[in-house]
Image (cartoon, rainbow, N blue to C red; front, side, top):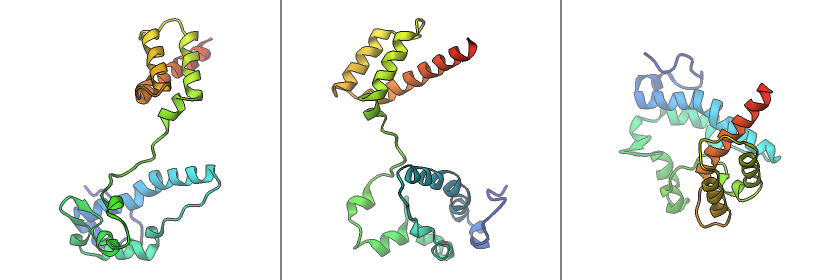
Length: 171
């Protein structure tokens, strides 16, 4: 079964003869426009910014897909051509760091307004599948910067928010 049932015309047919190039093409045709670029667009529009993606220029993409597979990866290290071309221009600190996604500042949110909101949700709901005092202690610890409970608090907050809103719908 082919991964790509619909391909962009600018991506050469040769990309479909190699599984690595085919995955790259799937990223270019589906994942980038339907996920990553959508998130970038929304985030920049929210703050009246404009983002540029120079490596997504049609000629650059066509050139990248015309390169032999060996220029795309070296063992488990990707972006070989970019690394070779920009080796002297980009510091190793940038090349060697892990990928960074579109993280949400959950940890800061719970130290501010979201902390107040979760406290209010806990206080107005009687039946909880968790110990309220433990969660409130976790929130206090988080807000004081003693421990980072951001992801745990997020899970509890989403549950409480959902429960509160479904209760309102049933009423």
